[in-house]
Image 1 (cartoon, rainbow, N blue to C red):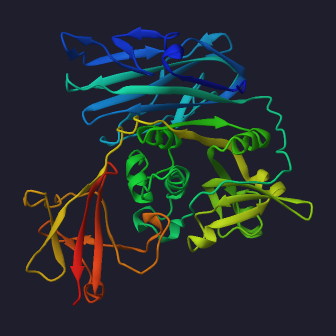
Image 2 (cartoon, one colour):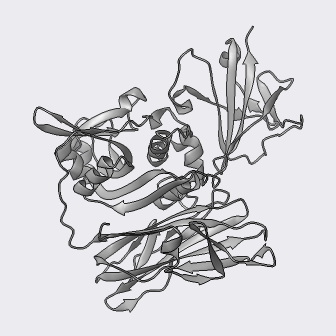
Image 3 (tube, rainbow, N blue to C red):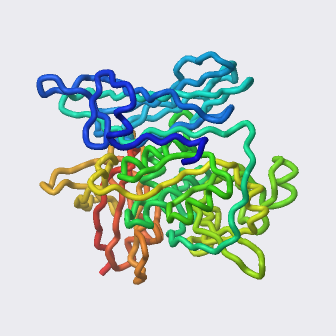
Length: 446
């Protein structure tokens, strides 16, 4: 285990923590029960964790949070011999409007989004706790993983080994996704690559809505990214990794996403103070890339990635020279080690529905299996889209060409005339703010 990474998962590990109105179930922490009813809130607290001296701390958690339940991760750090107060990384559930905390820089520590910063001095210890809440006495959240990683003050990077290794991950371009997320889609697209390699078939838009940070209106919160992956049943956490440690993760076959800061040209480099990444499609001042491995060619080491700033899915399978790539790498990574069978009920799902044509041409109303109309609410927040048959066998649904739609005044989905004139079967999606939603089919043309 890396000295700057702490992972707590499994029943044996959780027995080492403090339980307050919570209990241990199989490989998870849940709310305590009294008379067959769950208490409304409880808290699990980790032991004190010793790290190399640090000024930045990230926290990760994996939890199942059925609708009506929430978890809230917190941490405190020991700075120059004194403990800070407990700092929150935000409440989490796909079913709520998640908001990260952004505090003014202050001593001894403060929160900026998904990271705790120590602006002066050095921190040496940390402690984690996670609150579990429910408003339904028949439901409880389940916490399956709690993790922390620090960026050491004296961090000497080791270079990655110069060997070839290829992981097969589907590649997607964020340029082709819902324009609502055009500039903040890289983490969601990366997550889609990382979990779809195991057959998940998630759409980047579903993940973008599921991890959206409403404090900033974007999808750059990496704590929410790993929490969402945990809801899909994956062990996912964040860590500060040097290139050698990144190589070890790839060698083990894990999915890994890297946080990058780079310029595509000298002009942007001078303006933003970023290193140039030769051959990059566009400047990525804060960009996430899914790592596919390493390649050796004529003595040169290349890093293989899925670069979502590419204009097409095919072009997103890119490679960059290792020296320049590591100069652009921030040191922050998201790791997914695989899926745990039977632990994937913590995320909203896509539900099949019918579609009823309205008198207004091109407008279709979703219907339940019982024939009940399901109009989209007036304040609908989400993505409306459809795919058209193209005769191509796609590796994942997200590889299909998506057309983005609008809502009619009646709460129906409005299809444009150019799609209605094509003969075939259109698949229509209504993805809501939680990342779940409805999917149905419309037969068009002759």
